[in-house]
Length: 173
Image (cartoon, rainbow, N blue to C red; front, side, top):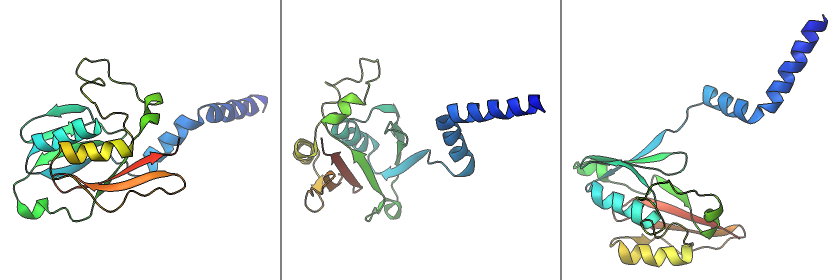
């Protein structure tokens, strides 16, 4: 009986000390996880250029037909498509990105000369600086409605050159 009680206490201690890992494990075992998001595009190179240089998303790989970009916990796949029906974007999906100088404390650039603040110049820009650069540097980029400033930060929606909608969020400092 004493041995069984000790085992139970050890199990409880282990569960609580490993709670964050256990929680992630339980989530991954009991629900579907979003692996990546695929966007269709007429011009993979142009679309990659927008996300890489405009939003500072590093490229994992790129071919003429497809590319993959790092975007936090969910990568973005850009897939070439020439079918008009598959390229109609409508107002969905909306990709949500957090931007701003506060990310400097949370982002570590890959130890590779390919990715640095020079090659990804917009990495830590706030919305007020980023929007004019995106509109100027990437023809076809438009602001969809006003920039809003609710109590928690600054938000806006832009339409990318290939017609996808992006929500940009910059929390208050």
